[in-house]
Amino acid sequence: MLSPKDREDLSKRSNELGQKIETYRRWAPNDAEPRSMRRKTDKSAASQALKIATELVVGVCIGFLIGYQLDHYLGTSSPWFLVTFVIVGFAAGMSNVVRIAKRIHTQTNLHESVVLTELKSNNGAKT
Image 1 (cartoon, rainbow, N blue to C red):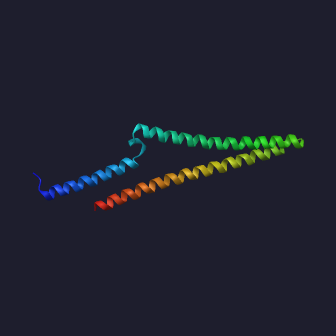
Image 2: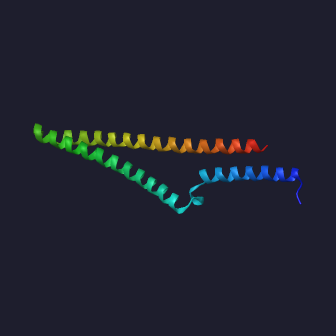
Image 3: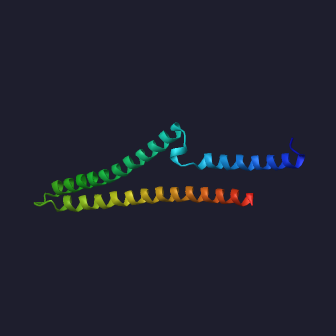
């Protein structure tokens, strides 16, 4: 039989362990997540990659169309506007790609800092 003090200690340790498990479940790496959560993460990553590729392609295509139309409308003998606007479209697409990548990086760092803070606070409560 357990004494009342031992039961109290056991209950306290059990609660601490439950809190740690709950924290881990919330912030577990992808390998430890249920399949439904992994699919959602995978779809999110795939959608971000598709968005980045689309931003770059659309920028170049719009630059091409503007340059081609200007060359055609103004009747230039060489494709100066076409070349110029393809380069401008590429630069615009790259700036969008960099903007999206920075946002993804910021979200990832924020997620990691929240996890570390929560884990530290739970470990600090134990001592």
